[in-house]
Image 1 (cartoon, one colour):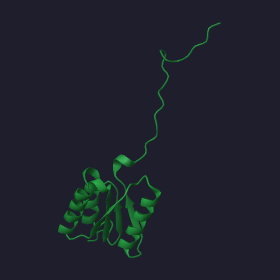
Image 2 (cartoon, one colour; image 1 turned 90 degrees about the vertical axis):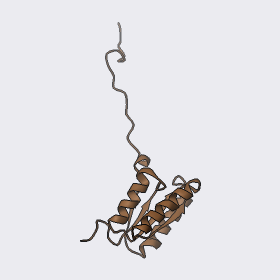
Image 3 (cartoon, one colour; image 1 turned 45 degrees about the horizontal axis):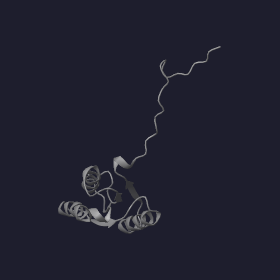
Length: 118
């Protein structure tokens, strides 16, 4: 039975540990043909451990260091993912903590609502 991403490439940022590593390992188990494991250069050893775990399970992966806040690094990551996919459509996954959430505006209550007096 084919996996959810059978034959696709994957890009996982923050993949040196935690949710990012778990996501990369899941993509590998689900049949991704090439996974780009990304994190900061200072996390290289942990990122290479993620690559080792993927390869130990029969998958294909490579570590590419980079800072996702840098446009230059973003382009390099996309290029590496396209190369890993050998031209097939790529699936991009980012770690959960990098997802932007809408800001919350405090609700006005009777104690904080402004009132006008005449």
